[in-house]
Image 1 (spheres, rainbow, N blue to C red):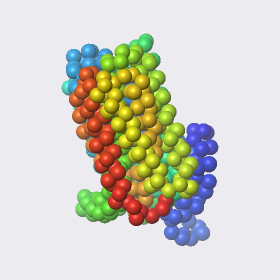
Image 2: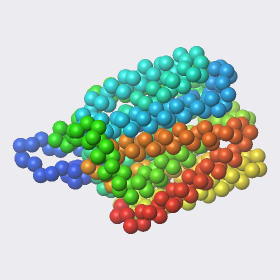
Image 3: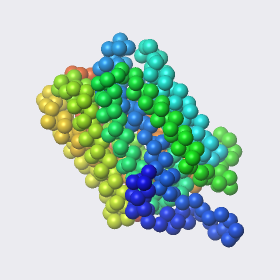
Image 4: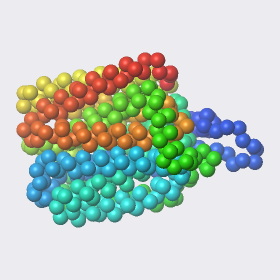
Length: 425
């Protein structure tokens, strides 16, 4: 947490100023508005790490999971899909509910469910039970993640929001680095099921961290009542804004690109190129480092370079990486092509996803939970659809993965064309 606090002090030098954008004048006797402190931000990052940990930690074990549960490669990849669908549904419901009932209490319960679901994954005797437990794990994790994002949106806006969300995404890149390495280490001495026990333990620690460090950030006078009718009205307001929808598409498709890579990289690097789980995990971690560094760099650029320009640079790099991977896939995917292509691909996403999400959130400041829910829902729906399609090549060809990356990049560039009149940042 001290490292996160220090970084926050650099990228958000005046949290009080940004908070004032969200707060009307109050009487002198009213308690001062909450600020986005390093402790709160670190806790949000911790909660947001559940998705990469719950996916990446057992990705190196995909071939072993398939053998142990007597399942094919596509069935094992479906465990990603069910998790992503659960994430999407959890975020779709968790965000609006937190707009109605506040952030703190609705954040604590799903963390308890997440702990139990992770243990169920660890003890799954068959692929069907694994898929069910993964859905519940994703649902509770998504519910928690969207509320964490809404907490940030409660406290900062404008350029400060761009910086803060890049910190969340960049520091959150530690989870993809640690996840596969920890998963590979577990495989060296224990069963792959132990990775889910670790996730369960971390979920329990997350609950304690939230209980200790996160106050209620949405006062009662800023909550939205009215049940489902009000929720539908808020959704129509948010989705009725063209710029929000355009940035929403870019954010979701960046997630699709990421999980086209996640779903196929183990088979491309291990099955097709005969790398060991540990070597694969080291390469996976290196790609996550590239993603984290570019995300943090994008946060530092906020206010100096137009955020839209940064996104366009990232999309251009994504397209170039996609072309390289397609050429390599047609030629049997040489190892050097996969290594270079995957690193460029993941580093480019650090310039795209968090920035597009921050600009989308700026378009819906009065409904932060609903806006975050829409972002999370489409992101994880996209990931859930893309993962099995990208994996159609199995351990034989990477062409479907490369084609999907290029298609998503083209669609994102088309969406960005609709934002040419978007205001700065």
